[in-house]
Length: 592
Image (cartoon, rainbow, N blue to C red; front, top):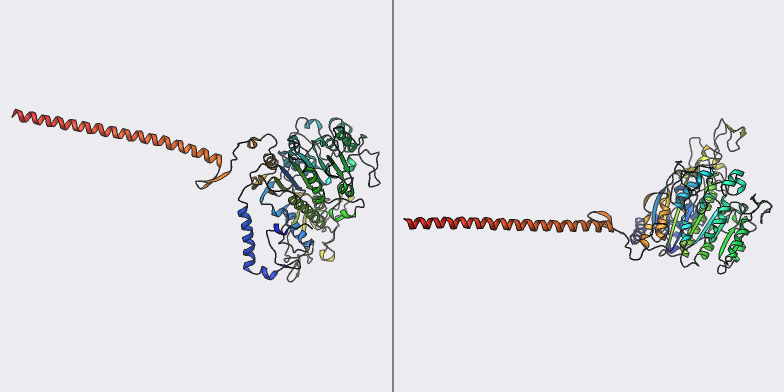
């Protein structure tokens, strides 16, 4: 458990880890909480406009708002700390925004198009990795010349170290967009491609090898995509996948050693723990043939798998050796897999582990020079709604003061359910698809009563409204939470590809680096004439107004001179007439 009490904004009156409901009934309790939050909000008004030395980007795959909220309660209950009132590590990041996740061709996106948006800075079509929307799925020729570069490559080009951590395969779409360009996000190895496709395109694992010159550390799963199918896996009695005979890890080791570097490859937790950070120049750790295990099952791995927090810690230790800074990408990938299976317990457990990794990064870095961003690629269809009492088990059956919450079919319900997926347990008259019976649909079977089983079991499948083999993604906006230099640039609702542009701006990488030049004055913002203006805009308006005032003053001065001149002319004319009249009167008097 990783909890920093001095960072907790919301305090809890608790006895033996339980909330004090008596204190919560008082006005003072809530006023003090609000006072603390207000204090932190006022401190947040001091914006950090430093140039970021480092950026750590956390992507929770499938981490929608419902996952974040339910995950907050789950994590607190898991550690016996109450529930709804205990903040997550990510909740402590001061700047919050929302991200619009739609892609060029889809209302509800996949991992490839969203990863391209987050890491490369453009929206594209589904199933495309780091290519513009002009490319077409599985048509190699359409991807030529349409590559887009990721922030990871930009950071490496700027002399920074880079790293990737994932609980999925290292060739998974979300992280692959950092280094690969592909018209199919499923071409993990050459075994997934036709002969023609292999001739015209490169598989993602091969691109990982080629791009690894730009990657200091990579930790995750996916061994079988790196080794030839004539070799057995190092851990299990199964063959690897590559058909071209290449051993990409051996090729990587040979290449790095030829440059005088010391590369280390590990495949289990023991080897990762024992490796010497100081003497290691490059590190690859692949801990499973495919995806890493769910956090619930991780300790059952005989060879041993590191947690996502442990991988994050090791990656940071490697990257922090570079005085120029680093960029680290961390994906909590198995949250989404569990949602696809309608298994909320696994999803929330992996989410809690993902939050632990965020806490690890926050403790190992300083917000003065390190920007931390937490976001998601897309949402999911898990819903969080019931009549449950406060403190109820988030995985349990919903209860009220009078007993179980009952639906119209006189059966209970859980607080967590899914909009669609394999958890459907209702009536169906068409259980067949393509001539086979689908095991997840029970023909003419009434909905099961959740109260008749253990809904908190590790593999309990929540009920869904619509029968599908796998649950879909969700199309809702997803959170962006950030701290550190330039994190205030996340505010309101943003297009998802905006994230990459903020990273480039904060790190001074890519094309727009004018703000990094010595003597450059940050625009900043000021209150001006009842509105909000950038300083440069305010200065421009002030200069314009100053010039207008000067011109107006000159015109007024000239007008005043004109008035004085006309007055003197009129006075002189009047005096002349008076003199003339007096002269005439004198002449007339003399004549008389």
